[in-house]
Image: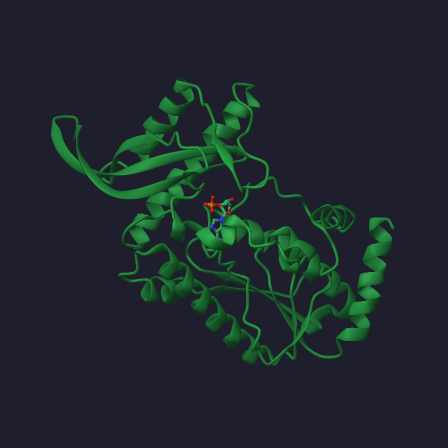
Length: 314
Ligand code: XMP
């Protein structure tokens, strides 16, 4: 069946499933966006789309997602919940604990939106690989991979999953027909920058990591554009709570460390670090230390494959 037929069929099914207010958590990712657009076609403004800004999004991401979802005609509410996330993450540095706190707070925020919208239905962008038994993949064992959109089973809502039987390529085809701009953004973990800021999760340190990630993205994309490298599968920076001595002019400074990570991979289950030319790395290092002067004075490049490393540092 072609994508337009799949869409028509999914919309008809949604019309028969939903007869009252519904809510969906939209991250701007392809699955939740396609699910939201289908539900919007079926029930219009009875669908409330909620985008939760946790404070750990990439640079400009919230604005870009807001623009895209609004242009698609969705009834969108952007909730800035960053204050709450930072407060609950105070003193939390253990990666799994972080994921747990973020997942829980996301659910609390979403529940409040559900109550205020009076929603009876919850639309989710679950696709087939999300629920089909994977036979206990490595990712489950190593990290809990908390998807910020992953909501508990005990919510008092009727769950509707229009993409449940579909695979990623079918969802991509539907997105193309629905004029959903294909994001060329690389994979990004559900907990966002929170798992790239090692140590204390303060606003200032998160901002430094956000800036460093943006620089890595810009420089590697420019290098790929110029034909110097093949664009890695994933590329970013993490901020390490390791201080070292440096110099700025005549002054001795004591600053933190940024690690740059770029990997080649097919599905994230295993990865090889990307070989990036030194002059590209040099440019990244200079830009990061100039932009984050006073905070970061050392930049290192991670040359660990997965295994034994993971792609993210947490
Ligand atoms: P790791 O670091 O385990 O990551 O090698 C493999 C891929 O998964 C992403 N990742 C996550 N995605 N929630 C997610 O939705 C998470 O908690 C999470 N942790 C890691 C990671 O960015 C990489 O693409």
